[in-house]
Length: 132
Ligand SMILES: [Zn+2]
Image (cartoon, rainbow, N blue to C red):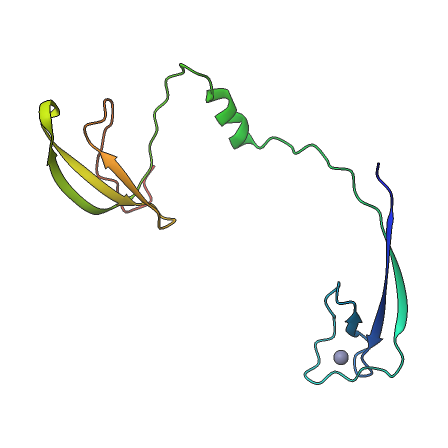
C-alpha cells in the first residue's frame, strides 16, 4: 500500500544568499529572504523522495482520557463553563411560569442561550480574578 513517491522540481538558487529563490512547480516555499532575489541563470533539478509515514495511532491525551471515562450513558456529570452575559430577559410561558433567560458569550466569542429553568441548572457569578 505505502509506496515512496517521487517528485522532481527545478530550483533557482539566489546568487546573493545561495538559498532557493524560485521553485517550479512551486510545491516548496523558497527559502531566500532577499528583498530582490538574484536567481541564477540555470535551474538545478532536484528529485525528492517522499516516503509517506505510516499513520501513527494518536496518543490519548489526559484530557481525552478523562472525558472518555465520563462518556457513559447514565453517568451523572456537572457541566460548568464561564461566560459573559450578553443579554437577559424574563420569559413567561404557560405552566412553567416566569424564568430568566440568558444569552451568554464564551471566550471564543460564541453565544449560547441559557435557560435558567433547565432542571439542575445553576447559574452563579464568576470571579474575574484568578481564583480556583
Ligand atoms: Zn537571496
